[in-house]
Length: 232
Image (cartoon, rainbow, N blue to C red):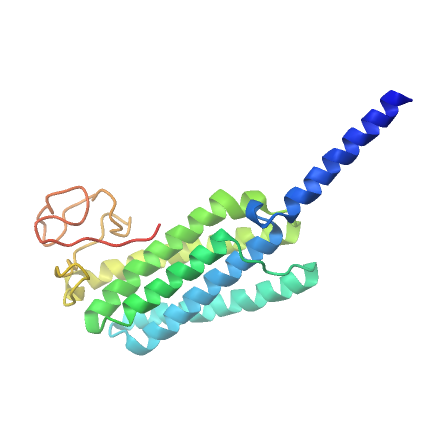
């Protein structure tokens, strides 16, 4: 009898630990995941609306319009899913970071104009979509518990990957014509080609930029004095 009581207590304790863990917002509950999806969509919509009004390149404007339309549709679809599943978005470190990054991006973009705005917006779009992909793969998808929410995350990941591919293509089309703004460190923007589809995000360059000349370092910050600010 004593063994049965001990065994029952052990099972009850295990169940209690599971419940407490799932209620902890730091472990990535479905409520936290919903908050991250909501923050990512909101940030993209805000940046896209700003780019629609301030971008000068037609391809950048088209891309921005696509971001507003597709992220707004995702936002509506996910809100309906959350309501059906009884999920209430609850902020955690991941969603808060997405909000912080989006706000910093907007503040930086409002300081730009002309081709410098186009270049900065596309560079940030590459960085932000890479960041969201990493978040989906590393934290959100592994932590999800609802099957329907997992399906939504999988669909979202495919859309984000396509957005990233499109952003890199638009950035490549800007080329040297995007040069014309001043970065925060006082150096002129490079306006060079992207490094083989990696988005020129401060990673090791895969090819010559700035008119075919090497920058002089592994990051895009050689003799011309530029630094590239990214939030990955």
